Amino acid sequence: MKKLLVLGAGNLQVPAIAKAKKMGLYVGVIDYDPSAIGIKYADEYFKVSTIDVQQVYNVSKSFRPNGIMTLASDLPIRSVAFACEKLGLPGISIETAYITTNKAEMIKAFSRQGVEHPWFITLNNIDDIHSKIDKITLPCICKPVDNSGSRGVILIKKLDELYDAVVYSAKHSRVGQVIIEEYLIGEEVSVEIIVVDGIPNVLAVTDKITTGAPYFVEMGHSQPSKFTGTALESIKDLACRAVKSVGLKNSPAHVEIMVTPNGPKMIELGARLGGDCITSHLVPFSTGIDIIMETIKLSLGEKPEIIPQYQKGSAIRYFNIPTGIIMNIDGIEEARKIVNIQEVTIFKQPGDRVDNITCSTDRAGYVISMANSAIEAIQACEDAINQVSFEIM
Image 1 (cartoon, rainbow, N blue to C red):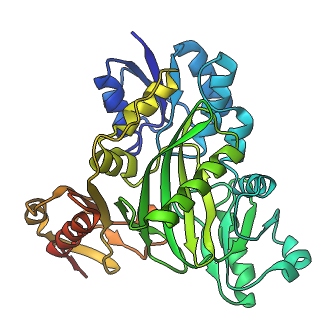
Image 2: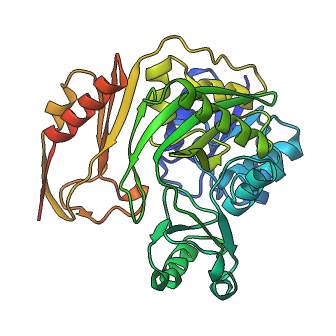
């Protein structure tokens, strides 16, 4: 029986753990939290931080897996790469893992390879502002070099906001570094890719909506994209050149792009599957490709099957509710009965406090749909969102 080691046992990793078990694999999981929900689905559990590179390697050496992976988390990729390289397992290189988990190194790689990107500057500490302030054009975006889920991302409109913005972003950086870059105006998409033997294969292009300024937290996704023809091909071309520029050979990739009036430009990418149920639900619903299973195969050194089986529509929308204390929630079961709705999930319960949405963990829940087209899928989500009412005090 082949063994798979999954880094992380939280909600994001559960689909991979469950899928691996269905595939007949012996599954080990690593997570620092012994109460993580995914542990009960696995065969073995190791209480180790997923970002402790040396300890993950030690566990891997003892467990002796045929493959190691993480599903939709960024920094554990460094641990995956280190252990795979040391043990001779399939995976990305240590260098590529570092580039794809450090936004400053990533955008430098884009620049070296002629991949369209926003202007940028990096700040190692707050004092760097004084020597680089003349290079900043407003408005601009400030974000930590090594975080995800919109944590620490903020829009700067005026120079007197700069200092506080850098401090805010730096607090969300493990190394205290931030990157300031051009505020791209346009429509954001993501591209879901599996790279096999250095060849990027585009599985889906996903349209995205966010909260907008100042934090840009993702609030919805839908497939297939509304972009077609030359515009769609330009998006795919940019995504493929971007994953090549950072050295991905055999890996999934989640590529984020802004389609501006002057054409698509890179935002950033991850050497991993997309979160927000994009790969666990939307890609399978819209294409018939079980992207999690195929990524597991890739981590085991097997050939993935990534030919679309059909083209349908899929969507996810997150609840955006007022701040305060939740007193009651109504309409959940009615929402689940709406045509084309596949799932309704609520993170919050009566008695919980709802704050402003500044990162992905602040969201209260979501609805997911599958239909014949993206338009129908989006409409089903909107109907379900409107069906659920939150009583807030």
